[in-house]
Length: 340
Image (cartoon, rainbow, N blue to C red; front, side):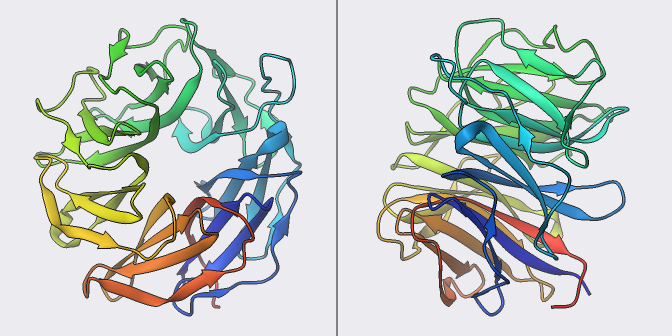
């Protein structure tokens, strides 16, 4: 019977697994990073299994079987470099399905290059989709992907000058499908997610340290709506929250240690800000749909804890998950097809 596991990465250099029902840890910490772990991502494979990838300091990405707690394949040396040619810390990690390539990993280390990898082998993709080198002098803030109504998918990159570019991964990656898109954000873009909208369109939402969220049409690069969402506090993390009847909300978090829910199509605040309970900023967030229809929000914070919030009762769920000894930078919800 499948259940949802939480996987987290932190400044203590470890990847940890958690059971959100009991709020307890699962197995031993996964060690394989030389220092801080800044990003983790669920990696759905074509055989139905879901792996987890983690990246951080030293430019290393590890791929794990979350159920067994073992490494899959070899460590990926991403070869990202800083301006002084030192290994760049992997700050962005995205799993997606590409035409003719299956599941792939995209990595970036706050440099102007995005590299693509086979998560099963740890080897670079050898076909046309090997890497992207941006056409203008800026480093990458975040990565995203979204499906189009015609079945194609696009890959989006936002750089530290608040510019977005969009590529059709089935075509020549040297030629973006959109011109440079000035997002209008006045601070770093810290998160980008694909969110379903009424009418069947899937938008790309960008969230920034300027405390706003903006919504984009991934087919055209045009902004959807005229006014951005104003969250009042700088946003460090964002996720999509699936509800009943095909409804989806956006959840944002950051400074202020509160989570806010938004109607993505209208930008309206849903309910009141939720005081999750962290001491300090919220750095990451994930939604956990339960089999009983309820949805939990998991947050990781600068206080080295992971906390759960029950959206139905609008109250904390269980007890804080304690084990990391430094800031929790990343969290992912992963479906694991095994009995606990």
